[in-house]
Length: 441
Image (cartoon, rainbow, N blue to C red; front, side, top):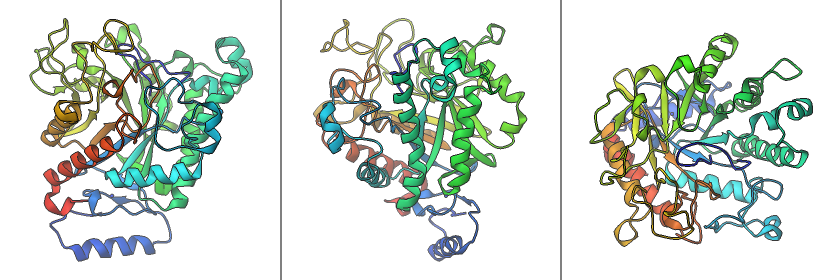
């Protein structure tokens, strides 16, 4: 997901109980699941005990799920790494003529990413397909009428991103991974609710696209509130005033008017930089720790800053936000690094000095200071869904000009395998804070 500090816009962009219970019971449960003839879901409380690769993952009020934001954007006919400050260590032969990097459709790349995500100890990944939704899914007539930027070549390259993302479902299933996939839809452009010639909106078409994949590959599902989960990304900033008919409210009304969709899927709205949008907070007090969001907006957080010492007006100090579902924290996002209000680089440059309200990747001795601090709060909150931001975006504008201004985890030339090790360690500590030593990876 490519975001700027203030406004999002793309680059045209496991029933196991607690581990203290009988290990034999867990083994029997797994064996019974494997013998089942149909893919009935398996509920997950302690995923580190081992999710079933052949069954959906059911998340409920007792769950603690770790989800990684992941992008399958790259390839010769999609996004390249040419403008990126960091380059991944993983390479594909067919990318060498365009500056190097990898192709997200390369089977060797897919297998390596699955191995790395499993090594990290996450339960699921977010399949990000949020940008240029109407250009991808709607007709040439629609593009000509509403989307002057949607040229045939731009449309083709964005459809490659769609195809790469969809390809994860059969490819991951063939690999037999326990990892699941959560679709992330684009909801921030008003045109996603405009009807095409067939009478459907691109928002509906994107739901249908992922819905078909979830039906064909049910072992990839994360089910929540009894249905497969889909996320809707709205970026930043969000107008809290319903009378202004903001985009999030339009989508909410659209879903309420389409019960055939809400009967089939659980939708959750994600918005960015809620750390600096006090009108969306449960209270208006100056925060001294993580910020609870107002229940009426139902937003999940995405890329919040964490800078307790900054003094930049008007929103410092920065603390990440969270929302509740009953007596549980439902969602919390931990980030590697985040830009301040004015993005990366102060003044507008590709080198230090850093902005005083940035949350940088590295602390003393190259420690992952921002991520560690975020995970300390995660251990206090114990959310149902802990999102890690992020595995592999690489490209601007969200990603800046050096390692400190990039929030990717995938091994790259600027940090080697350091981020992979740091994130695996923090997830392990997080698991043990919930389940004890039995949760050790």
